[in-house]
Length: 249
Image 1: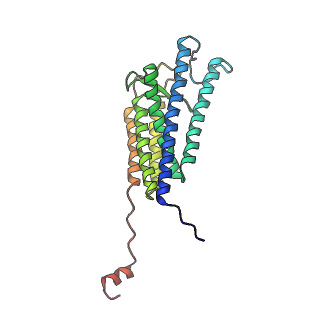
Image 2: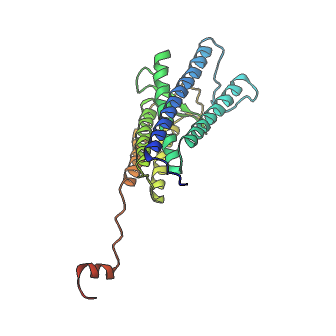
Image 3: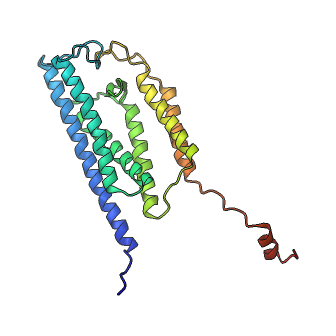
């Protein structure tokens, strides 16, 4: 008794279904993230929440503010673990899982700002400053910057997943991974380099390092696009070329 191999079409439908569920997860996660900020914003307006100088350093261990900051840092770490977990469940293979995580992260971040705008009318403009992340220290920048990163992650991730479904998965060379990591590092540095040492959540830098940010984004895009090019086929051995041309050896 023979068992028929699984249909490629069924596999494609399954991967699309998984992508749909991860999309729903990312949108929901964006709302949860926005809801947390709405609650914190309300507490601050009521005078129940104050951020100490040196935020987010735990300047007074055991104080309500330090406990809140520690909780926020742990929540951010948990969010990253959630993204990684869902990506691992939704895809197979390192590249596909990384692409899935990129899509989830990007949709989550974009939806986060969309929900914030609907709930508390923030950001006022795409150039409004925001605290983006706290690990290992505060990341700050205009809202437009993380949205550009998220859009690139979603576009690249969806394209990579589409190629995986067609059996044309990306297998970047190690040096291309290095270029992509360097680009990511430049983007992260653009968010952290000018954060004041005594940052209190409101005293944002007077300028943003757009050249550094755009250079990092361009490096990441270049590394991805170069991975789409197939390496040239190796030339056949000399004796086979001679036989094909009909010339005597």
